[in-house]
Image 1: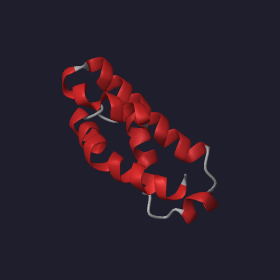
Image 2: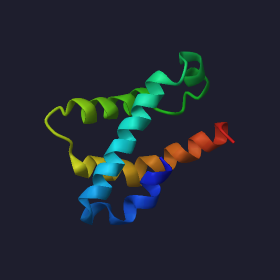
Image 3: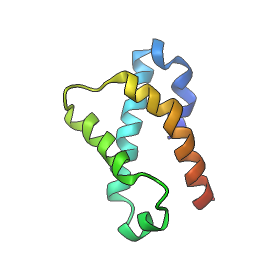
Image 4: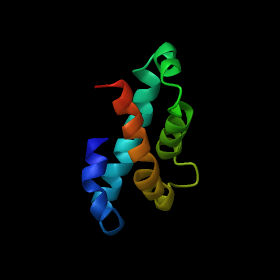
Amino acid sequence: MILIFLWTADFPNSSMRAEACVFNLMQTGELTKTSLTDEAKDEISTIPWKLLYGMRNRIVHGYSGVDMQIVWDTIKDDLPKLRQELRKHIP
């Protein structure tokens, strides 16, 4: 997730950076499913785990293509909130 924050300044103008961000979002979604127990997710119920995995599914399975505007909006609007929430629980 850190890479996403570092690379977002050039996101609209760099396909390489955009693809790297998409890959990191996909990885984040995958890790929510495979690396966390249901109990751990229940303890941090303020994070929308299903939405994170849903984004991963859209990227991996390419349902109607990936809308880069949605990806960009997620990066600039949602990731800072996610990061802040995670920092409350993970020092």
